[in-house]
Length: 271
Image 1 (cartoon, rainbow, N blue to C red):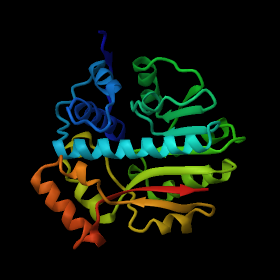
Image 2: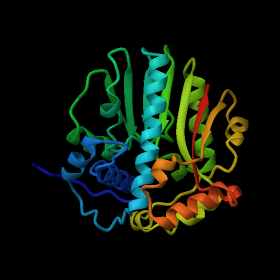
Image 3: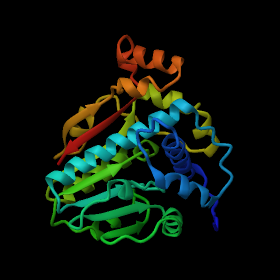
Image 4: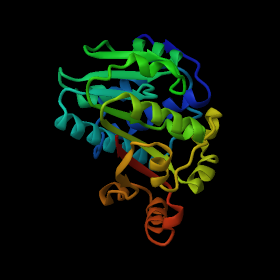
C-alpha cells in the first residue's frame, strides 16, 4: 500500500490524535465506534506520529465523542432526510462513511487546503459530497453552500483552537445562512483548557487551545438565533468502566463534587 507523504504541524497535526484514537478504539473487542476506516487511513499516512502519545483513556473519550456526534447527525437526518450536512474541520474523520447518508443528503467537508488535499488521496470520491479547502474562519466558504434546505453542522475537536471572537463569527455566519438546522460541537471549560495545555499529545503538536465554554447559554447570548437543545457533560457508565481506575475516580469527582470545574461537554443548538 502506497503511503502519502505529509508534514502536518500545529492544529492540523491534531487530526492525527483523533485518527489514532479512533483506529485504536475500533480495534478493541468491545469497541463503541467500530470505525473500520480509521486504521486504513492511518496506515496510508507517512508521518511519524509515534511522538503523539494518545493514552487509553483519551482514546475512549475521543471515540465516545465521535459516537455521540454521529448519533446526533443520524437523528437529524432521520427527521430531515433531504438536508445539508457541513463537517467543519473534517480532518481525516470518516463520519460520512460511518453514517452512510441517503441520496437526498448533500454533504460538505471543510478544512485547510493541505488537509483537504490529503483527504482526497486517502478517501474515495462519494456522490453528493463536496470538499471545501479553506480555514473555517475565512469569510467566503459559507457562500458556497446551498441555503435552500435545513442543515446539520458538525464540528469535532475544532472550535477550542479558535479565539472567542472567531467562534462567535463562525456561528453567526452559519445561523444567518441556512433557513434552519442544528449545530453540534464539543467544548471545554476554562479549567479544562488550562489542563489540556499539559496533555502530552497536544503539546507534541504545538497546537494551542484557546476558546473555553463554561456556560452554554453564553453562546445563545453571542449568537442571536441559536437555542440550546442539549448539553451533555455526563459519561455513559459503560464507557467509564472501560477507562483506568484513576480516570474513573476523576470523572466521578467532576460529575459530583467538582461540577463547577467539569472538563468537557457536547452541545447541540437549534437555529
